[in-house]
Amino acid sequence: MKLKVFTVRMNPATGLFDEGELAAFQMGKEVLDVSEHFLVHERVPTLLLIVKYRDLPEGARAAPVDVARKDWRAELDLLGQRIYDELRLWRGRKAKQDGLPPYLILNNRELADLAGKRPKSLSELREIDGVGEAKANRWGQEMLLVLSKLLAAMD
Image 1 (cartoon, rainbow, N blue to C red):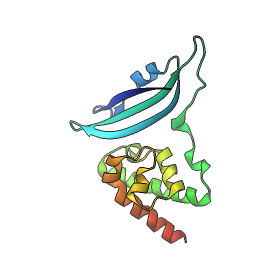
Image 2: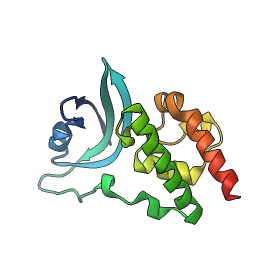
Image 3: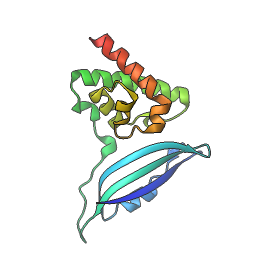
């Protein structure tokens, strides 16, 4: 297994991240995992992507994997799906309030992980892949409060 780190800055004119370098990199490789970390550098939203991959043998083709399109909610039980839906609403409100795309607060995989694991502390929250110090410091207490209120209301 190999690692490659990408720093992808948001284009202020479009509000989008340029994924061209990442797409070009994937040729001839099988991507095993991608960890994403959001930060603001020089007032520009930036994604730090850590890609775990392996080189494919000459002529081999990787099976297409579209992680962004996966229905993470479908993998949860009924309670987890209800929690996921409520957390998704919270994420949308918070993103609008902070002027950010919702996936920068929590992507769908992280939402599903949060709904499934239901952390009760910041240290448990940081165990969710993709929720590092920055997200935990910025939104962690609020995530835990929303989660605890949801669980109390569902009992």
